[in-house]
Length: 113
Image (cartoon, rainbow, N blue to C red; front, side, top):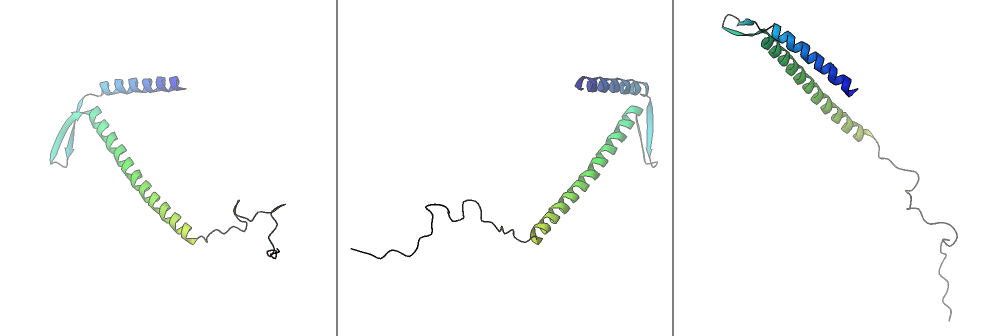
């Protein structure tokens, strides 16, 4: 499976490389008639793609932080709302011993000389 993944990755890379070499002509970007910028078309597309990825990651990071904060608040509220757990059975090893030789002691025998 790993070899197939590398083959697909290499094929996509080669195709994108040839596309970028074919689209190397310069384009001019105008910013509201204030400034103009001239760069190769491939570079402009790459910058636009990178900006979109960065904005998407920022938006998802903000959402993740908000959801983590909400989850921790809900866990605190849930923990406070639960009554303390009281077990009807004693914990193992804490009950009095029973069985032969562990009969409860009666009153002490009177002293005889």
